[in-house]
Length: 208
Ligand code: PRP
Ligand code: URA
Image: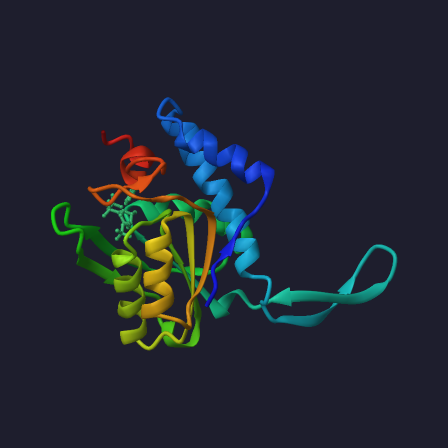
């Protein structure tokens, strides 16, 4: 499925601040969270809505609601956790699962270390969160882990993607919808996105 790329001057503005190596940890976290929130609104454009009765101070009318129980957010640890606050602003009652994966720095292959998902995950739409889609190895492996546990509908939210990573998800998992704020130029020899923003986990947690 063709990725949805946010195309907006304010997103360019905010991503440029994320790219700047001098941006503080606080501002970096806030912007990751804010862009995640916007991506989440986009991803939920097709959410089913149900009518219910509402009494305003003036009259009776019909309200509309989304069943939050139909959704789960699943961040890929660690960097994906940086997006959770933002998406919870959109849907505060969604359940949250966690997938632990890291990239082996030499082979760039994903290594799985944790998976804890909400009950009845197979009945929910999963919104998978990871700020960086580089080779696509981690994203693709996380989607496979979800599918093995019966998940049928997955939407993947990333802040910055590389063309090769987008292609990998599209070819390994053509049924998965991708929402990304920006598609960058390429990967460097170490598998980092260029121009990118560096190591997202290290910048969110201040570990380097
Ligand atoms: C980063 C990022 C993705 C992965 C992307 O995580 O958050 O999960 O790399 O790279 P890929 O598309 O080539 O797989 P990392 O492995 O650095 O772990 P961390 O989140 O714990 O820092
Ligand atoms: N993971 C990151 O955190 N940054 C990149 O550029 C690539 C993978």
